[in-house]
Picture (cartoon, rainbow over the protein chains, first blue to last red):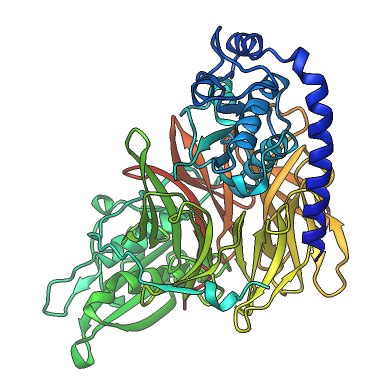
Length: 178
Length: 435
């Protein structure tokens, strides 16, 4: 019962935030700029966000658009806060999901090798859930998203450098094929 | 309510038989300042059959690798006595030995072998310990570990842990995006390693039941984490928990009736107790932070666990009956995966010092005085597991880009390294006493 109520509360608040989000982001979001900014930072994604990338809010997000979006989102050590530069692309993913109710994603949370494995498993889940929340407040529904944590078990980059650690503290967003 | 019984899936274990090669080799990298000097003379074989093991060789290795002893190389021995009357104490005194071990193997009843050993004090020229041991011809290595345990206990006062085993996980990168994970069971010294589970997906957190007959662990073989229990004798295994979200960090209660584990089915990681008979599940932590890595106190009355409820991971102790919570660690900005010694006095954990940069080390906290000693200087350690006699902590560390196992005595004086022949080795778990 408690869980059911909580879910309802989350959905209502998501809807409210979504409504608020629509009224403000339409003028400010520029995915292309956000993508370019990403490229210059260490630990930034290498998948999306080229000069022509990004999707403006309110538009229909096409499959072509999806290919240009960032699908890997990075985090600070022992933190699960999505960095600002990932917001625009996550909003676009959320809109795509809202516009395509049959589409669904898997969010894989990861941690770097430092610290203990089970704590990192929990941290990876917390990161995946942060991304899930951002998708949901922007219009995706819970049944379109599954989360799994892989902790430090599947590093993107082998090595004991700050660079490797930065690349490994991530959430990977993967569309599921039906 | 989810019907728990439907989740208990009986599955056949992917048992892979491996040759009995040594996967790990123990190297002592640092020993005690004045180890006891002991000569283990090759045992005479009066059995009439060829022996599959060099018994004295195994005993010598055990004692040497414990760090408490310095053993005499065979080539320096002036003779190989196997009976009391042939032991010339003067020779051993000249070689500056404190103790000498001799022994012989003779035919026993119904195809067994009788191994007789005798331990002498060289200075006092007297027999300290002697005993016949009856074994099957296949059990010679076990007999050797048994004798090493007896000698170790006689001379150090600590119960020997040479007859124990370890489980650990190895990971190999086969090709891009393709890995092989193995759960491996071996003697404490790395010999007789056998793979007991193989999977393309991660395996972690192996935990021994207190009677040494079963393991619980986490496997991602379905793409998501589930907790399995595997019976070591038969290889039979069952999936005991697979809720949405995390299913992790299983820990057996001392009486073997319960598993403490971590589930995030209520939204975030919390610790639960699973009754293995009734399958009843009881949630025992309630906090929006991360609660994980439960481990039982030896009396079974409380659990220690890692929580970041204070802003950083620290170790807490929860009294199960009263639900009273006590924070145990205050030094350092990262303390996790605590394990208690069998007397409940010392807490071994992964520790990062305040201002210690990126160094994650093994530390031991004396719970009586709250003194914290950092035992390693490796930088990237994890997964401490304490030998059942409380003398040594085994842990995982990095050598280059490869994970290896290492061990350190609780007082920090003896360090071992156990480099594996292949793969990335991690997650060691030391068995309880097995006999």
